[in-house]
Image 1 (tube, one colour):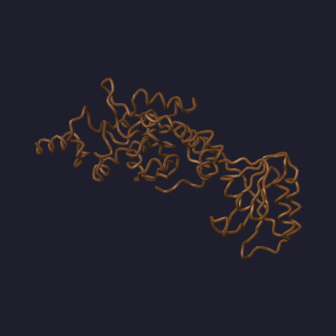
Image 2: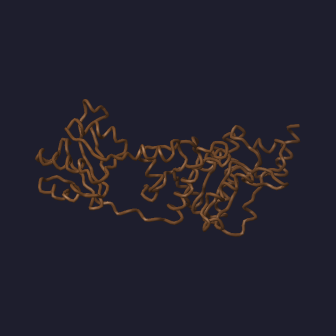
Image 3: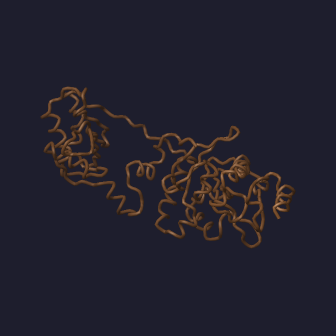
Length: 337
């Protein structure tokens, strides 16, 4: 039987010689769909493996495909190609040994070289392992990776597989967000904001903070500390962001300038005690505990971590996660595969 299987593999699929999947009973093997492609597309969706429906291979079933179509912006739908990372049907991650993956990768690489996408969505853990050789879809979903093969470069973003989203509706929010933000960042190429800030390192520069004292516009605040224990550690820097500018006040650095402490904390109190506007923090209780040690309170506090929980209790809420969700164009370069 092994001899017959080897003979079948070598005669029918010489490009897959050595792959144990070829010896399994399946409706088809090694469907190289990219050989039928006639034009390049900006976006490529890769499922784990093909499925067999109505006598033909499809990378996603009807419900999975419909979910993707619901999420995709209308203007990009005609510029999107769908394929599978593994070219045989109904292949599970457990079936793909490292040897099988190495044999199969050349096919998905050829798909990318043929389609020439700017953005590749790898749906599911197996597809992610096939293309960027990483696992852990829960932590890596939404993270852009840089892919390069034979001189061609593109961005790769892992997604929850549509099957997982349909089975766990709580994943849909992140599924939609990852697709929307990746298209915005890679295809639309929204420009980064031009961020500048002023360091308040002399008493005279505290005049720059005067627009914040009675403003009705939101002011965001963040602190940096020497540690996490508010009873033992100290504040090193206080930063404010407002429509009039961004400001950093060195408070407890070893090389901090000699600032008048009454002027410093008087300014901080006037900003945070202003009753006419909103003060925005991330994880406000951490910052406020430290500020209370300096006899500083705050009125009208909004916490982005709490706000995100109210939007979707299942979504991650760290500051880096929120930037990735709402300001993807501000991210640094893609991670390296």
